[in-house]
Image (cartoon, protein in one colour):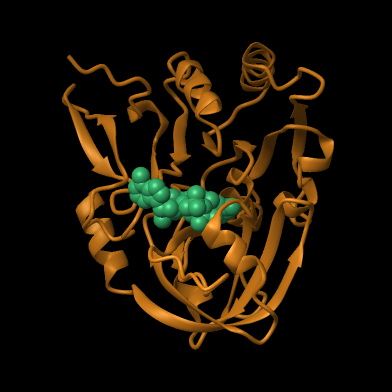
Amino acid sequence: MTHEEGFQRNADSVASHRCEVIEHRWVNDRYKYLRLRAPSALGSVTRAGQFYQLRCPISDDMQPFLLRPMSVYGMGPAPDELEFLYNVTGLGTRAVSVLPVGASMDIVGPLGNTFRLEESFKRILVVARGVGLATMAPLVQKAAAHQIAITAVMSAREPKDLMRDEFLRGVAADVHCVYDSDGTSGVEAVEALIRKELAARHHDAVYTCGSHRLLMLLQRILADHPELIGQVAMEQRMACGMGVCLSCVRLFDTAGGDKQFLRVCREGPVFSIRDVVGEVEFG
Ligand SMILES: Cc1cc2nc3c(=O)[nH]c(=O)nc-3n(C[C@H](O)[C@H](O)[C@H](O)COP(=O)(O)OP(=O)(O)OC[C@H]3O[C@@H](n4cnc5c(N)ncnc54)[C@H](O)[C@@H]3O)c2cc1C
């Protein structure tokens, strides 16, 4: 399926939905878990890797004009429920963070494409850091549902930031945790770890989200593993979220050897790791 066909299929199901906050709580000192009840069975049309644009409420007499993109962290437990896991960082997410249970929230979506995960896969490798955990959590659930084994490399500043249970949500995986605080999350150490894992066991695909440094590392490793599928969910700043404003374009390599700008919101957010152009030189 081409990017355009994928978007068209997705566009048919995009709409604005008035939801009700049914659960909202801190999971650590920076992240909040938000569960919404939608007016229809949104969970059944939302795929791993897709995102919604959240309309943030008025806070301190101001309402953020732009909607905020947020990956779906979970579809369920009921078909009309959606879950988000978000970092409270700026004006918009701070405003969302004080929404009480019972409040209304408007969301637009589902937006974007989904991860490629084939039922024939035997084992996948997921490499996650920060908000990447939220984006890849539904992928982990889907892999487990298809009896696909999971190797996970989870990276965080320090153990209290890791959110291992929030990521796996009960799924069994071979997990390697690496931290900035003890130096194990450095590029060289993670590269050695991943190369060892790939040499020791067959993997069909590798996925990442949440760190440009890890993305570039995986691109380098994939050059030595042509048999592996590699995908990244990009988290570019975006405004409209629908492909109109072009604020989220990134440069990618094409099969023909040229480079092209693609919109993370429309052609993505999931792309081939191999196609990402890391450094852009103008001149
Ligand atoms: C596809 C996608 C999925 C994401 N999923 C998650 C997730 O699951 N969990 C999570 O914690 N975070 C996620 N993020 C990041 C999240 O969207 C930001 O943290 C959030 O928008 C911050 O909003 P804020 O108002 O709190 O911060 P602020 O920094 O105050 O505002 C950021 C917002 O300002 C706007 N903006 C600012 N500068 C620009 C610019 N140059 N061009 C265009 N727009 C601009 C955008 O709307 C942007 O989202 C995701 C981002 C993307 C793109």
